Each structure stands twice: as structure tokens, then as C-alpha cells.
Length: 328
Image (tube, rainbow, N blue to C red; front, side, top):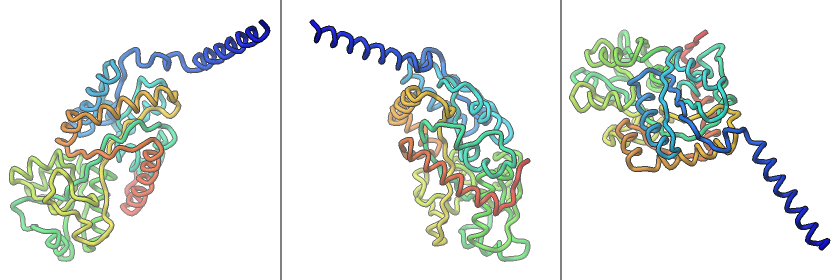
């Protein structure tokens, strides 16, 4: 009887401990998700980040059994939407699609950034990355990277367009100038589409831009790609050589997209989100839609994502300082 009483008491204590552990979790974490999840896109509708977010959100919603509501919160280089999630409730119901801009470049570009890209967020998944293409007017005089190098060395040099100061396209141009030498004048535009139009008409000599935007014009005979910005050739255009292989340098810059939650999000909720997002990205339908945007996948675990993010902040910091770009 004594032994049985001891066992009963121990079982009761174990049960109480388990119950206490469950109660220690935030109330919402125990049934997560039990309502729609908001996915903040820190850029406008129709942008590459928006398109990718909607592709991922559609599949993630099916995995979680809840709607994913895409919320475009554009402004100030993606800082408005990113800050909103950083300072918002850490309950898994508000996520953000971070980019190389919002979570790497902005760390140095903005003098007084309202959030810390590393400390204020927990990574859920590296959705993928995309190289940018160095493009020129298809009917213009620049046919090769050697032609561009020669023009930069002559007269007034070459001009390169971008979607704005401190953007990945601007910084890629600065790195190219350092690798090729000569004179290259940066011309920032309010948005990438305007810059691309001026490259096609010859008002600017070249620009770096993402595959989703330039591939239709490459295929339509309006733009010519002289190189890819990544270390390996882009799956979207295997015939375009990388700048690294043409120059023998370590030129390796890619745009990327990473899904984040606020840093204090409960571990069980993060685990659920990571599992569901991994399952979404593994589906052929999702992978196909991302590939159509020039996005290539590179699955990483939580520790590897953290290491990747830190290395990217350091890499782009050097380029921002080199360019002299700064936002107050």
C-alpha cells in the first residue's frame, strides 16, 4: 500500500509538472494557429518581394490550416514594415518577408535604423536567393564585359542606373567599378522600372537587376545580359557567364528573401512555423512558382540561417561604406 501511495503521489507530481509546463507557454502557443496570420511585405504590391510572399503565403496557409493575409507596408527602404513586425506582438501572428535590403544592407545604410536586423528577429526560413544580371541595351555598342571595361576607361566613362541609393543594384555597380576600374557614374532612380527603361533606350549604359524583371526583356530582344552577380551561373539563364568567372575575382552578390518572426516568439510556435514553411518550400508547385521569379532555394537550419544573416550584414556593410551611401 505504501509503495502504491508513493507511486500515485509521484505520478500526480509529474502530471502537475507537465500541466505547469503547458501553462508556462503563452496561451496562444498551445493551439497555434487558431486565427489568420499576417505576413507583412515591406515593399509595394507587384514587387518581387510581394510576389514571392504571396506564393509562400498561399502554401503556408494550407500547411497551417489558416489564412495568410499579405499586408503591404512599404516605405523608407523597407524599414516601415520591418520595424512594425520587430516591435509587434511576438505570438506568431505577425511575420515579415525580409530581404537583403531590409535585413543586411539597411544595417549600415541607415544611420539610425529603428530595428536591429539580427537581434529583433527570429529566422523561420531562407525562402531563396536570386542573382542579379548586369544588363545593357541589346542593340547598343556594349556586347561584352570587356566592352564595358573599355568604355569605363575612356572619356567620361560609363553610367549605371539603379532603383536608388544603397540598393543592391547600386552596391553591385560599385563593386563592379572596383573590379574593372575606370570611371562609372551612378544614376539613382525612384524605382527600378524607370531605370530599366533608360538602360533599354541607351540613356544609361547598364544596371544590375533581378531576373523576374529583366528576363522577359532579354528574351524579347530589348536587353542583353553581360554577366550574373552570383558565384555560380543562374538557373534562370545558364548561358549567362558570371562576373566572377570573367574577371577571376570573388564577385558574389545575391538578393535573398527570408521569412522572419519577432525575436521573442515562443519556441513551439517557431518550430511549427519552420516545419510548415519547410514543407511548403519542398512542394513542386511552390518551387516552380519561385523558380519562375528566378529564385533558387538553399534550405538552411536555424543556426545556419543566423550565421548566413551575420555574414551578409558584414559583406554589405563593406560595400555601403565603399559607396559612401547613407540615409539619416
